[in-house]
Image (tube, rainbow, N blue to C red; front, side, top):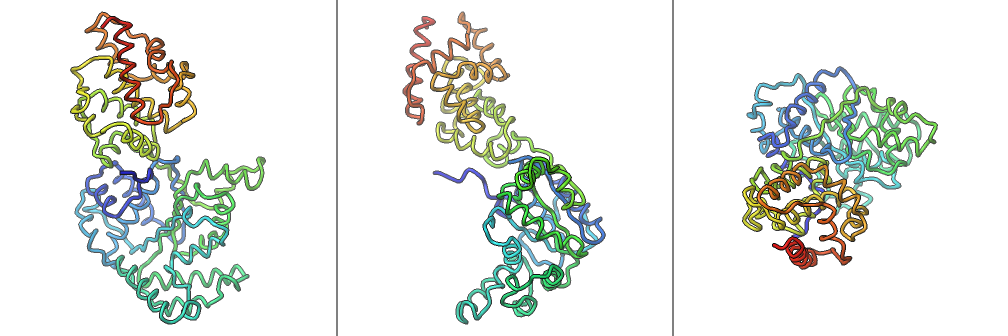
Length: 433
């Protein structure tokens, strides 16, 4: 079965991750919520993390916990999160209403404020006279049901009164826009104290949209009822600033206009991530050891791609258990060295640089191959154990020539499997096995 490379965190997955602290982020979540609860008035925070480090997971987990801690939101599905050790004795002084906005999803030529307001009001800016009474009733019912799921109640009539039919077209004065937006927020908040607006994936947007979004929401910064939390890679965002305004622009200084605090998000342990998301826990096989070592150099997105590559070539679960190739730590042969250690290492390279990967397997990248393999502690150990039980000494240059000197299409596992039979035969013949 083919699935998307990037895993979209469903509410069920997020709850499981929090319940068992499967990626070790519960402490970070409590730290961020503690900071939020310590803020007086309006505020803006950059949660800064490298590409693929799991910022979306973290932001959505934080959003979920905030909903749980807010007793004014009726969300029974996640009530039991308060029984988790990290949150058992955790209390907050205010009721926070969290909203999540994926900037990349709305990246277009539209004014970002249109999509942001549309996201907040869940389509309530499409008024009755624009779509007809019958369709409007369907939309109204649907919007009500969506907000019912998170325990939020607000009147669509009030939203309509707050923003007239041509609000975004006719508002030209910045102060007027601000008044309308603040009134909308007040209506959404109800008796809650503050709106926590999470803006995610800003660094994945086009530079024009990202900069426009920042400029359009800056008028909210001073509003005491809103805390803005941007989830982004500040380094990439600073580069966007340079692309927009010229290389002489100090991108990092420019961004300080848009945040009061920058919080670095630490990377998670990829071995822990493999176990949490894919169920691939520690196992006593060379394959599992090679995969764990290779994954430790990847971020979450790269790790997802790596697992997808592995699943295209191996029965991963069986290889982990050692039931397919019998590649347990007690076994040592040329098959294990190549198929269970070297190939998984090469597949991890493919997630980072397909160009170098294809050079290697086409027989044109011996230096790249040798440099990659010399950094693998698992391969070194596997070869040492093999050589301790054999009269044969493994030379990586000769091994590379044996595996990849013959140019052919390595695009499918079938071709790898056929070629591996030849590799094994040549290897055995050369060493008189």
